[in-house]
Amino acid sequence: MYDDGTFTCYEDEHGRDRNYTGTYAFVGRTGNKVQLTFDQNGVQEYKRMLTDWVEDLAAEDGAAVSDISFDFTSFKIPQATISKRTNLPGGVTLTIRGKVSADLDGVFTRKNFSYTSRITFQNAP
Image (tube, rainbow, N blue to C red):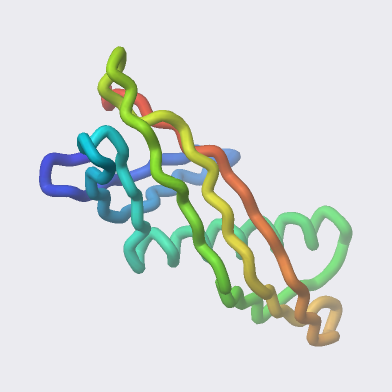
């Protein structure tokens, strides 16, 4: 989290570096909570991560997949309470819901999906 109200979430996803970006705002009666909002680049990085995941799953099953696209219908991040001890936000669970479309072995397929991920905070080195 940077002083200008932006943040970067870093993930090492099986050897692939991911950087999810966005903005934050302090909320709550005493400003002891923080609300995170992923920007367009952060949302696009999630779509790239999910696309890579679908491609990896298909390859493991010996299937051919192409033209993968995601329509997010919900992208929710609850407010995080800031710890008095560490001065860092507590962990939150990101939930994404929507539809994924792809050609799977030459057949157009469209399915609902739900994805959750736990986000934790630490001081940067």
